[in-house]
Amino acid sequence: MWSNRIFSTRFGLFMNLQRQRLTQNVLPTSKRCKYTAKHPFGPNEAAAVHCTAITSPCSIPTSEDLQVHMHASIKEDLVWEAKALNSCSHEYFDGKGKLLRPRVVILMGRACRASLHCDAPESDWPDIIEQHQNTIARITEMIHTASLVHDDVIDEATSRRGKTSVNNLYTEKECVLAGDAILARATYLLADIGNTRVIECFAQVIEDLVRGEVMQLGLAQDAEQRFSNYIKKSEAKTASLLSRSCKTVAILAEAGDAIEEAAYGYGRHLGIGFQLIDDVLDITQSSAEMGKETSVDLKLGLATAPVLFASEEYPELLPMMMRKFQEDGDVEAAHEIIMRSNGIPRTIELAADHAHDAIKCARELKQEMFVDELTAIAKKLLTRTK
Image (tube, rainbow, N blue to C red; front, side, top):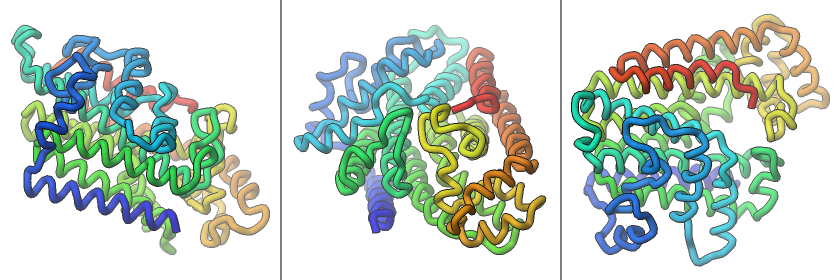
């Protein structure tokens, strides 16, 4: 029941974003001005993220910078009269996340600007582009975190990032509403940027999140179709946010079609690769190592890449997949089969292919410093353990 309500809410937000796109309706000046005093890093808080203003536009933000400042900045945006809504919506903005998405978005934004202004002094770079791109990084983390809150309700999670998951600390209603509220505040920030192409990209992200969740509920009879659906689901649930966030910072930089496509491609391949490795770790790592419950996908009846590859070697997995691992002993038997199959190495190999494609896209950019950092992120994807 709650999952249907979550889907409806996300689709409603998507439709609101589309209406904003069509009417070019941004926040009233009075609404924007109420944020300005809280952040000294730009004339308009909705277009300024102080976590990245601490470094120059041609520098590389460190993970420490983001961990200290990004979540603190977001929590200042998420303030409501209801105390439960405040505390619940703040729960995952605790500085403990990987912050991969905002880091990639900031790097991509700076790479696009540097490619356009490589011969100009840093002081001549347009400040408003920097501010808007930084806002995109914050919006990206907000949408990602809102989806985590909703997912933990749907999946009945027990832990997240090494601590009790939000759905075990608050009621289902409070969690769903907190996720909705985070998404709603992100749309305010998005509307304040006022770029219709950017709004359209994030409208698609919201729709993709819903579509990916729905796709996850079914399982095709045909093996080839099962794997195709898995990749499409991974692209919708994980890669869409990263790919379109990267594309929007290129749009804001007015980098041109070729760079926009390269930015989109980098985010897409990185996102799919990230999901593939995530599905590997759900099988191979312990809950203590991951900071959250493992073997969750099997317990939820989901057939991920390691399962699909393993089923090609061990057909006895197929009936378990079709009944969604619901019979006693199915999860344990499936896990044992996957671990002795080639499912894990084949999934890692596929993730490596996507990492390689992401690197190829990054090399379309001109600035070596940022290309090297984006390349390092893609390579690190294959060696992460949590």
